[in-house]
Length: 269
Image 1: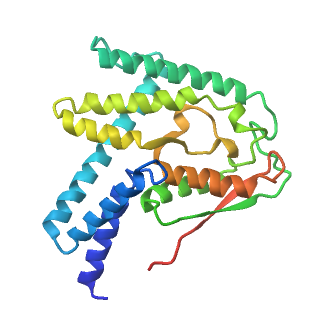
Image 2: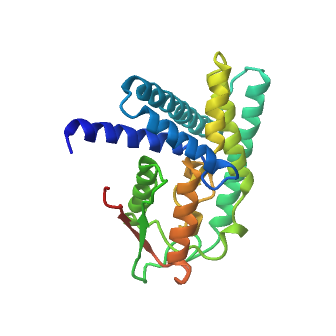
């Protein structure tokens, strides 16, 4: 394969990853949307200017989401320290954001208090047991940067001794209002940041709503149900890693069993 063809293929694959990362493959009506996206990508092959324009649009949306999420974490840090995040601005959108920030911080603190009373297997690993290796595998349909970010973060946590089989059912411990308000505040910040371009703000917020607030350290591996442990992730990668991969590999482990992470990539086509 020539360098030129390989470069075009790499660009096309990256573009496909970025666009499909905005879609939920398992949501009703999403498959036709993905087929249309891929058909559109096929039409851009060899048309550098058009492909670049589409790629630039996808990059702009992802940057808007990342920028808003960085702001969200900064605001939550401020609220945690008793500082008003939105200052004295009395705009309705800012008041709504402030309310959600206060809720997220309070509920995260409440969740920390619940978790910290658990003992071995709930708030800390059982170091008398050998670590169990969980293999995380990239699958087609997962944006590679998103999978790598999630998998590497878990791998580092395992190396630091912070991954273990959580005691009990995570559903009894999760506060879904934290993630709901997290996503709500994020989309509100996107609209706030791009109020001079409402069409773009609407498009970027819609893309963010198709993603999920992911617990970087999974609840089932001892992660806190708190804002500091959240980052947006595309829905397919989040659900597959958490439910189809990790849960199936640790369900029979004893509570508190330490966990390490191995990462498996599919061979390049």
